[in-house]
Length: 466
Image (cartoon, rainbow, N blue to C red; front, side, top):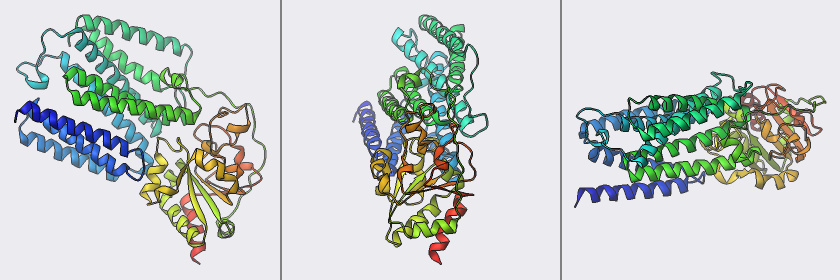
């Protein structure tokens, strides 16, 4: 059979696996198998491409697969659940860096090279445009992801970084990128000063895009950077004239944009605000929260839970920090053994990345059908005997519904304040990631269970066992 035909057949199989895998990622019950299908498709694509296009010996391909597999497996096993968001940010950055290097390579004539590294004489205008896009989007994705990593890992301040004339500076950078890109398209070459201008300005723009974004907006940033990495890969596919890379990049780019739109709606942001970096500055709250919190002990909380018939658990980033997902599962088991109906309310932006809470609870083997989205759980909240908020702040803040002076006003939240009793597990009265005070903490039906969430829930579980 013709070699080219075999390669195209392999690419078709890979593309089908990508589409099916992406479809299965839409449900927690099938996400793991979907991820495996997509990874298998990528493995097939990489091996076939390296064998034919780059002419690499089998020993090089196998060595790379083994080393990459060991690094990936080690990272997946060792990473803490609290560090997953920044790991995702780094993955996005690596994708951007790869696309940038592909574009760079297409301009750099390596003597005696062949296959993917071969020098292309007489680069067409279309190819030159795709090279510039690969470098530009890849550069923005790389540095933007590194800044997101720094903010999420708290290696730099998570607050929005702003200065006078920031929008003017950004506009000047964009104009500089456009002018340099036009000149590079007309005279493509690795030694062109316009190439270095595009490269430097794209790296700088990636930084400028993310630094004015702070706090609770980071899930939107992660989704957007994911889309950027896909678009950069798509551009690299045109550079290499590789149809599968175009398809896979388009899938990632489109799904990232869809996810970004979902995150924007969940944050009460518009997509245009995200694309033009207009959502970093939160307005100051004009309302002061008044009242005193009502503390409760774990033992007293047990007596209320022991009599409850319906309990809703609302997880947040604090649950990840306390690594409390497994004891939460134990609490769920004890409540159900006592005849209680237990559900989990999942806000789209709870945590530091899309699906963060779903991943945590899946790790603890919480049944998927008990994870209920915000829109579905809110109509049921008034019938809940107890709502347990574990480390969530902004996504349960009633000021989003009631206080027009709040920076969160208009943001869809989980209406836990409508439950008969609310337990809030926190270490202190400190505001959430958005830096906004929460009147829920001083509500009439709210009881504050202060301390480490894992220890507090373990105590309650112990009471069930006695």
